[in-house]
Length: 242
Image (cartoon, rainbow, N blue to C red; front, side, top):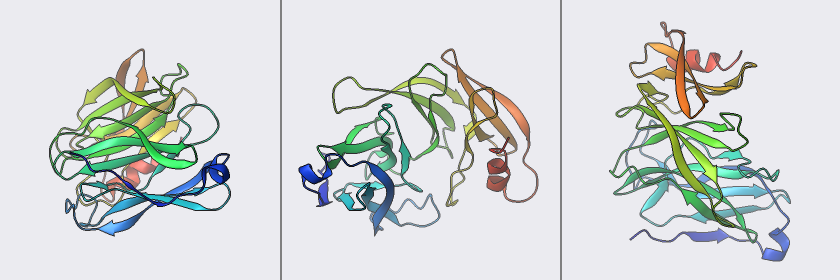
């Protein structure tokens, strides 16, 4: 059974109801999930957001779940002008999942997630958030097990009921990666050079830089050139500039 989270610092609903999230960070360093994929065996058990009134609010997972991530990502998923928080969580037995948090009645709450990968010490790395195919709906892209499976997956964000979010896979493409074991950062991300958004990543062997576009329900890739001597992450990140 997955244990519940704890509200560490909750604002009164009347005071927080009109607030929006302006920043987010992880806190509560812990070594209870010693995967070490991000360079050390320290992950975090708490998510802290700063609200537009300047006050912080935080929640902490129990001993089964951690935030195994580089940083929370703020993105307006529902088009209301206020950002939600996209994170990577890891379960002690089931590995990682992508999850969305936002304010519900003034309190920070988890409102939807992908399924867990299913095995301990299996991770995913976000690759981009936005309307990737121009249809008006927001998608989130991530690389499923960037060191093993190396599959880019795109999930569409929908809202089947008030206050909840569904993340439904709509496309996948193998042979891609955006993270090497031990790196503290995720390589690449989303860019738009005037022809719509595309994701910049590495091929599975970390020998080429590639751009991937999502259109008509399909993912397609184009080659941006070789990865030469030096830091491959820096080379990939440099291609985010058009």
